[in-house]
Amino acid sequence: MTTSHESVDARGLQRLFDRAEITDVQLRYATGVDSRDWELFRSCFADEIEGDYSSVFGTPPVRLGADEFVAMIAPVMSALTATQHMITNLTVGFDDSDHATVEAYVRAIHHNAAAEGGTEQTVYGYYTNAFVRTGEGWRISKVKLTSRIQTGNPGVFGALPAA
Image 1 (spheres, helix red, strand yellow):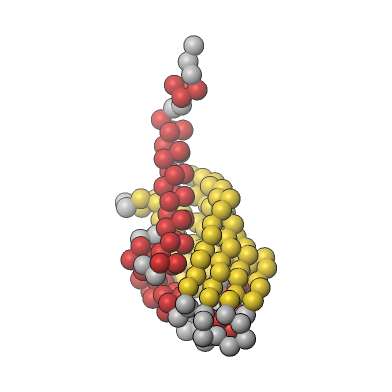
Image 2 (tube, rainbow, N blue to C red):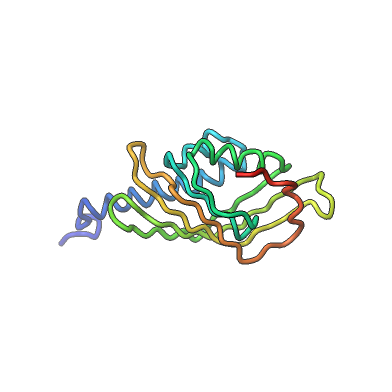
């Protein structure tokens, strides 16, 4: 009699490894932003990234090199006193052996102690992110944040820089 772990084939095992790595990258994304570790944040991305935060900021999606993308995000998040991005309920779907799509719930709290009209803004929503396997491992090639509900003061972000 074989046990379930003995019947796992190489492809199935690879999918488990891939799923774990993709999950780690998605969580590093949040850790990088919240800790203002922009090198860690950058390590999450493929060389070119499409970013769509239109449901939160009302800005159009952008397609940028990863360094430019980080340079766009860093000043917005760094201007805040603190943030906390809580990511849960990750589902990973494999499009093929080198491409995957992740949907993950997020609750993102943004705090700005100096903001007039309230110091916090919270986004409740989900990410739909595209991942690609690169020579360095799995990386995000597209970030899309869909807001379901926003509470608090959207003014905590101040004036947003142009992309």
